[in-house]
Amino acid sequence: MASVGIDDIAIHFPRLYFDMEDFAKLRGADFGKLNRGLGLAAMAIPDVHEDTATMGANAVRRLIDRNGLDPSSIGRIYLGTESALDGSKPTATYIMDMLEQRYTPIHGDECFRNCDVVDLLFACIGAVDAMHNTLDWVARGGEEKDRVGIVVFADNAKYDMGSSGEYTQGAGGGAILIRHNPRLLEIPDIWGVSTMPVHDFFKPRREIDTRTIVENVLDLARESGETVKEGLAERILKYLPRSSKKNDVMFENSKLQIHKDTPVFDGQYSNRCYSEAVKQAFINFRAKAIREGRYDPETDEILTNQWSRIIVHLPYAFQGKRMFPDVFRHDRRHLPIWEAIVSKIGPEPFPDDFPDTPDGIEEFEKANDSYRRLISKTDEFKQFVDERIEKTTRASSLIGNQYTGSIFLALMSTMESDYIENVEMAGEKVGLCGYGSGAKAKVFEGVVQSQWREIVSRFHLFERLSTRHPINKTVYEALHRGSRKRSVVKPSEEFALVGIGGEGQLEGQREYRWVE
Image (cartoon, rainbow, N blue to C red; front, top):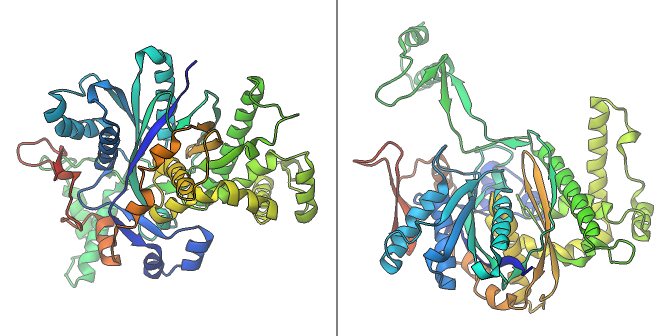
């Protein structure tokens, strides 16, 4: 069977960034811990005219133009996102709307009419799922059909101001060209999968008691010096209509239903879920590779040592090296190298060493977290990270979390770093580990192709990052709240959001335009 994989990748990120040192001052945080401990230097912040759809569309436009693609040859555009703009209409259709505006004058009306589009949702692993699906679709068509698919990732990783996740914010979009005989990365059809239904991070539908809203408003009035009569809250609630025809706000069972872009999460628990899911997916991948004769543990080198680079989902830059000790440990158990490590840091904890009770399970988790940190400090693991993971963190440090796109940003980061440093990677294997809260992990493999340097030379990732515009704390918080109405940097040569629900349009209808 002919190979399929990634032929090219394009990325778009906001032109604005908030420096992590300024963020630390704003929140009274320790910049040293954020920078040296987590690898954070800056977070990308979308401007007023940017959203999930514009970031995705700008990346697809870059990919189409760079490769001279005819829109009619693109069979599908599948979007992975957890920052959808609508509860029904796929964000991918907004992207198609922009692309049609751009390419209709060149390629004719409805040049995307026969292109299949859809959104895939599974937290941060949605784009990996979209790519997995599109690889299968391209392969099934055979070389003679020459199917061409584009996978898009686009997200705004936004957290409540003052929350423990705020420092991991970021944003961006990208587009991945999938086809036969790829020039960048061939992806064999072996996938390790681990899925477990957990509540580590999610964006629930939320309800607020109308009484709470009314009482908060009256409290603000009092603080402003207004006279508020006793019992006013009860009188307001008594006459409050169940619905308002003016703006269709519904008060079902005395509750107001709202949507928030920011998540509910348990950071420590999510880290444990991440580590366990990736480890189990790796075990599944390893078993499949052995079964299909692609790996022999008796004669071949340690599997993770066969991967010259290891690319993982990075909610923050150093997440990979903090979470990968579990896989490192599992891949070396019963080998002399592991015995040497144990002699330095002591024996590892096992669940059977603790009582089979909720408290016992919690004790084991804490002990395992501590042991993971001990592994990460060994010379053996540090060398492993320096050789295989470090280059993936460089762009993440400057952008922050991209949710579905962070694994692909890490891939671009390491490949451009190798290109700049003139490292020859053709024929080398790389391991990729995607993760999405909720939770699922996928482990797969890529083989770097002979034309990789030609493709990577056009990324200009770090050069473009160096031309962004810093913002101050006032602008940052205004953009975060959505109170700023004019763009910080005027859009130029890009797709932009120009209106929502304007005159003659339906409520919430979004309008986009290409801006020269």
